[in-house]
Image (cartoon, rainbow, N blue to C red; front, side, top):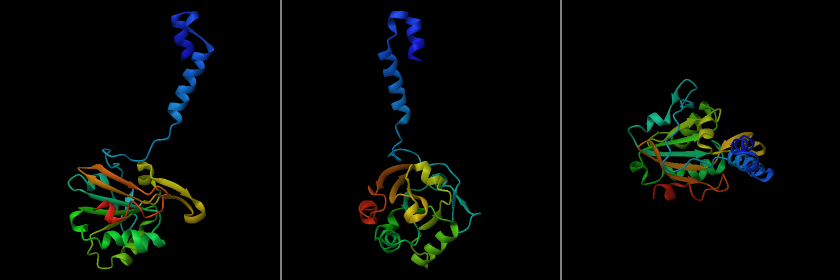
Length: 191
């Protein structure tokens, strides 16, 4: 491209340094990875999440068209921190009722997520819905996945919480180490 521009401007406009700088700038621009979901972005409009069984598809963009709430992402159903700390912090939070719709999303299958939800909230009184992202498509759309083959067998979601208002992300709480429980617990997210 720099070479073509230089030819249009005349032979004196082209220099190897300008061409090199142009190519380097273009390469840097395209090589920069996208940062994860940001405040103000809409929830991805995807019908890839599953609730209870593979045939029951859920689109969170549609769920948040007329409601506000929270999406809580976890690395794995039934894992220690997820089952003993993270999700119980939401189930037991006195501010849960005021949070709006609350969804727990994990890169797991629908049957595992249903069983996990039944174990954590057997009466379903909390109103929290447990959604499977079996192929990780929703997680990838948010750019909140990480590879963990040695621990989880493959790509998983970082531990996060997204507060959603009017179909857009109002606040982002992503654990800096992907799996910790410092910034995405209910007391930090719901206040």
